Image (cartoon, rainbow, N blue to C red):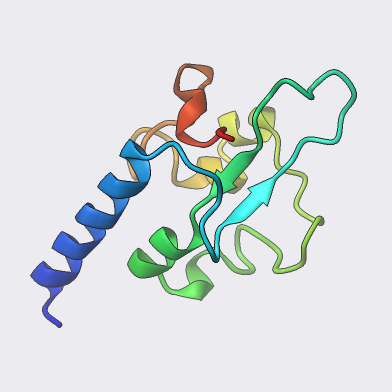
Length: 108
């Protein structure tokens, strides 16, 4: 498949993900908060397959994320400081992860 066709397929898939407010799809990772008082905040859904279409595994693992469930202490503070998701979601590489963009990641 050509690079142009891959980009088009990626754009279509990302668009479908963004316009649908759905639960996690197969292969997605659902991050549920465990802290008291956060029950009303929807879990963050990480669309692994969308990211995997664009990047090879080594881009994120183990440079940004350790490949073991529960060992990456991902918080909004960490993301805003440019770690974890914030490495790319900084407004330059990808949309900026801010409190104004909550529903792009946090959804039921």
